[in-house]
Length: 413
Ligand code: NAI
Image 1 (cartoon, rainbow, N blue to C red):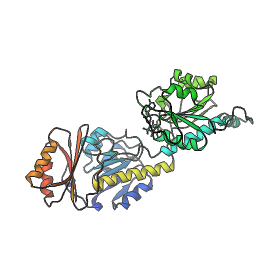
Image 2: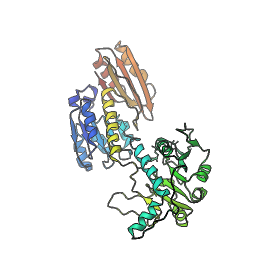
Image 3: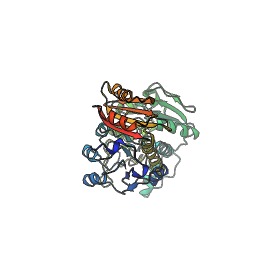
Image 4: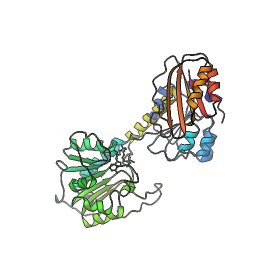
C-alpha cells in the first residue's frame, strides 16, 4: 500500500467520495456542505471486479447492504481512509481487515428507531381491534361486522421487553395514547414517563395485554420467547416482534395462535428470511388470520433513510475534518475538539506495548511540544492524535511513520 499521500494533508477538492447503491441525496448534500465537492455516485451495487476498479483513488466510500467490501477489496483500495455503511448492519464489510489497514467503519445504528416504534404502536391498535382477521376475511368476501373481541388500547398494559432506543421510544408514544407501560430489561434503565420496570420476564408476561419485543440478538435472547415463556403470557394477549427472528420460538407461537392462547401477533422478523424479494417466504405463521406479517420493514421508511444519510455522511466528514472516530464499529473511539490553528497529527498503529513512548520520543528528538494528545485502543488497534504548534510537521510525520507498529499516519494542517 502506498502511504505517501496518506502522510500529507490533502486539499478538500482532492478528497474523493464514492457513494454506491443509490444512497439518499441528503448524504451528498451533507458532504458538499462540508466543502467536499469531489463526489461520484453509482445507483447500484458493483460486482467485486468493478468495485476493485471503482475504489481506485477513493478516500471515502459509502455503501449499503448489497456491496460486499471484503478483505481483497479493502487491500486493493489504494487511498481508502474510512468506510460509511449507510444502513444499520455492517456484516457486508470485513471489519477486522478494515481495522488492520487503519480504516474506521461507520454506520447509523439508531436512525430508524422512530420508524420501528411507530409501526409497533400501529400494530398494537390493529391487533387489539382484531383487524388482521377482519381484513383477511374481507379479502375472502366475508363481512365480520362485530365488536366482539375488539378493544381500545387506552388503559391496557403494554409490556416492553428490552427498554433501549426503540423500546423506550415506543413506551413514550404508547403512554401518550393512554396505555399503561411496564418494561423489563437486563440493565437498570431510567423509566421514561410513568413506565414501570418489572424484575423479570415472567411477571411482565403475566401482566401485559400486549408484549412487544425490542431486544438485540444475543445468546441470552435466542429463544427468549420459548414455548414455556409463551405459555406464561396472559390468556388472550398479543405478541409483537420487530426485533430479531431468533428471539421467538415460531413453531410454539404458531401453536399458541391456533389454540387462541395468544389472540394475535405482529411479526416483522423471522428465523429464516428470504435473501431477496425474488425468494419465497415460508413460515408456520403463513395462513393464520390473526397474524400480521411484515417483511422485515420495521425500520424501512424514507425518513429513516434520510436520517441514515445525514448521520453517516456527517461521521465521514467529521473523521476527514478532525479525526473523530466516535461510534466507529471497528476502531478505537476518540471524540475530538476542533484543532484551531494547531496541526493535528494522527497515528494509527498495531496495539503493542511501547508505541506511545516511541511517538513521544520522536517529538522529543525534534524538540516539539505537544499541545494536546489523545490515545485510545480497541482490540488490535491503537489511535493516537496529537495537536502541535510547530513547523516541523514533516519531520515528525517521517519520524512516527518509521515506528515499526505503524499502520497509517495522517496530518491535518
Ligand atoms: P438497543 O441496544 O438500544 O436496546 C436493546 C435493549 O435490550 C437494551 O436496553 C438491552 O439492555 C436490552 N436487553 C438485552 N438483552 C436483554 C434480555 N435478555 N432481556 C431484556 N432486555 C435485554 O437496541 P434498539 O435500537 O432498541 O433495537 C432493538 C432491536 O430491534 C434490535 O434487535 C435491532 O436489531 C432491532 N431492529 C429491528 C428493525 C426492523 O426493521 N425490524 C430496525 C431496527 C432495529
